Length: 163
Image (cartoon, rainbow, N blue to C red; front, side):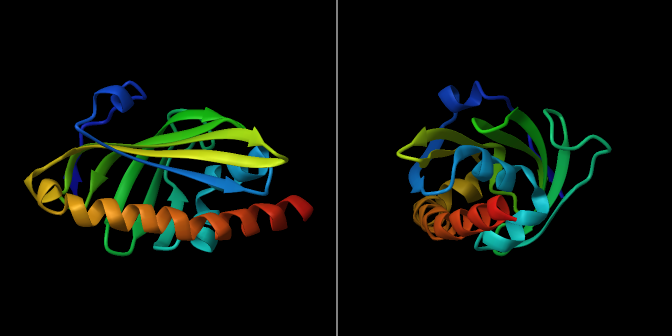
């Protein structure tokens, strides 16, 4: 795996590339957050996820680390940088098998809206040469992945909320 430079939330303001998408889901923010915060749930709703699990002793908190395996994007090791139940879930990438970024941060901001949740998703990246070369395709693909995962996330969160 290639090492990436870990970053904090301040990277959202300084990253060379920032992708954003807004989703409106019918499930409440706490239910959406709980789905985001549990790695094993991602297999159920995130379109390309193959595997996701905690790798640190401490879980579900700032500083916790996890491993994910995503079709096309490869394997990643991540660290949680924001963990505010019902409000914000963010992580930085520590290592990856695809050398497309020097630094990367993914951020999910959650807002209660009309009985559901508005998610403001952001992916902040300092791309490598490979990342720059594939950026137009990456922009399109990530937006489509987030949009197609939204209804599945909503369904998962609603089902778990009623369980």
